[in-house]
Image (cartoon, rainbow, N blue to C red; front, side, top):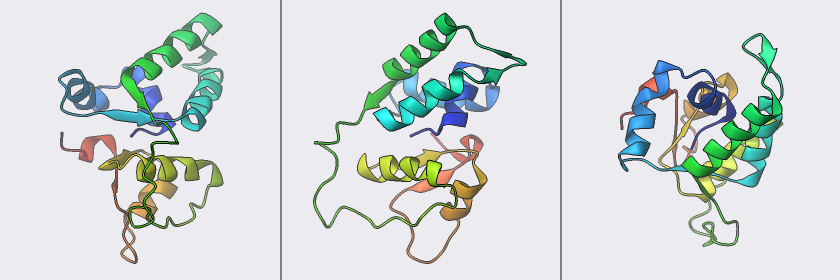
Length: 142
């Protein structure tokens, strides 16, 4: 699963640092999950000034539609619900980032791909490890 900044690198900035992820998804070797909370944040951020100017509404809509096409939307009713499968999550320093941890856990992700320092710091903790890795795009071997 991808956080908002990685989505921006993929959709808006066409960052070469995520090209291996694009190939893996295109070739069926990886799958991206999203939920409405994460997509709502992406929609808000797409309206911010990016590349020294705000994207126009049609471009914002195109990028959001691309994310919806690329990602598998997690149905909260079908998320992991067995009490033994639900890992307790630490609280992220930035409460706005907690939704990414929850989504990664609930969809059974292998990795949460991010460049966010607070999330990456949680991924390095030794006490009570998470059921998924937290990695920067370049560290994800796909």
